[in-house]
Length: 407
Image (cartoon, rainbow, N blue to C red; front, side):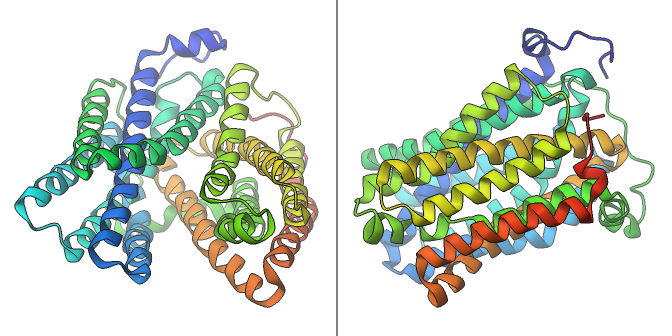
């Protein structure tokens, strides 16, 4: 580990070679993954013409990822985290090469694409805890907030550009998408192997019971429980992603391009904020800021739900992404600083489950309440619910609400 007395400037962060190499590896890996999933979905629809099969592609990724996340966190604490991440990149490279060979080979079938989706889900179950737990080992503690903010910016950039790049390359040919994805994943694999850090295997991750130690740790540390559950309920209640096609067509009266802009707006806001936080990190009143940003997220959702103006709706979504990013950076930083290094993989696995549950269940909640109250009622009620959660968490988790500094 680097010295805790190292300067905490943004320039010094960029001088941390292991972190920069890993940041690039995550950027290329996420970009490739986003491209490949767009191509797999398009190819599935080309083969079957079935909306049901499109849903199965997502389901076949989510279920194995959810089932494997806790065991993955356990292994991440026992094994070399950089090599675990590299193995995930290698597995996804092989998948991309298999897809590349399947087209001229004539075996690009529905079953193959569903099997590929399972592999992607399992790989992501190991990838997410490994990448979250590794960052604190690559930078001094004083640079951790900047490092997490800059890491978030890379992920958001890949989420914005990956699907668009995949769609453009798909017009050239699906082979082009798979070939480019394989090259980027291989580059991510090579960059990760070049990352050097001091590996210290966990002594507490040597029994089967320790698989669930992350759950017990989060439950007993109320600041972590409050931060993770706050994010879960905010996204669960306040998310509107699943309803964006309805708003685009029936309320805002825009077409597919408008829908694409609406989907990209939160990521653009998050990217802008993450770059700002990397340059000017949060230093005090972090608990209050986190709760205030969750409340602001709820307000943005209410504004979006009530808006019939495309520009206002776009702005509300962009601001929602920006304030949500503040909450994400605070939560991830607290998680890293409050967790001993030997537990970080298992705690990151719990956080991954919270994120997955909030995203997947949030889409179901949006659809269910929209069926009962209409899309506007669903989003507005979700925003109000988010405001109530932010207010309630002040009383339920006072240590989080009054937290001044990250550490």
